[in-house]
Figure 1 (cartoon, rainbow, N blue to C red):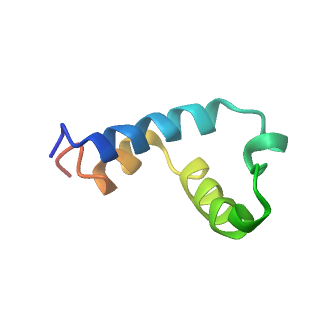
Figure 2 (tube, rainbow, N blue to C red):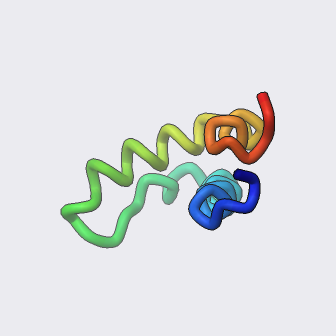
Length: 61
């Protein structure tokens, strides 16, 4: 639903991530999170917010 806390958090994450300079978008703080976060950050940063919101079901496609 549009009020899902997790989905709203993921939307905010995308807004923040896409506003960062490219050279720090892939930086993660803990070594064991590197592979998971690199993939997720790269995927989210490559989408426009409207598409990401549709994937999170925050907007009707």
